[in-house]
Image 1 (cartoon, rainbow, N blue to C red):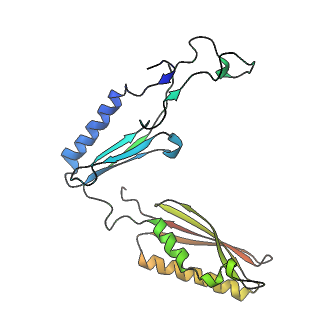
Image 2 (cartoon, rainbow, N blue to C red):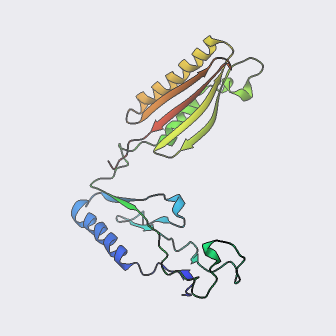
Image 3 (tube, rainbow, N blue to C red):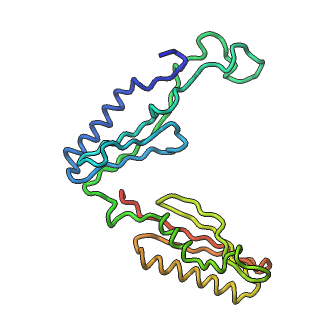
Length: 228
């Protein structure tokens, strides 16, 4: 391999440690369970990757790539062959300064050995709960279906993952009674979802601005971790 590129082929020590942990899990801890792995700051660590093979077989294979082979090689070559007078480290265009020697990146993996399969009757998908909440909002009270001084409930942002979702909304009405009704409606939807899924945690937060006749609200849905 050219000296300008960083290779990850020489990772036998880390590979051996991971293989021993996984093998110990299979042979000693979880004959009927499995193993989960997480990579800290996963999407910021591109081209890190998670690969699952043979998922339809009795024994699957999970690989946590710290530098996925489908990703590009780390190119350490200079952007130019002559200096441009910039006071920056990458202006070192002298011979021997464009190699990958000394380059490193710390990666943090967490292994979760389980004696059972955690998905059934344990995991809760916060995204699905968020979808049910949004589906429960009356469409007739959306801003795209109201005019003039008719109040509305306007969900304008939904962010999160299967573990945690935040929905942000605007409640608008020109009457205090109308705002109270909309708040009661949201509380009723949240309470119904909490009864339907008691393992999850749902929270409704409201910020009232009477001068603007609006209530800024948010719903937080969190899922219990199956690996705690």
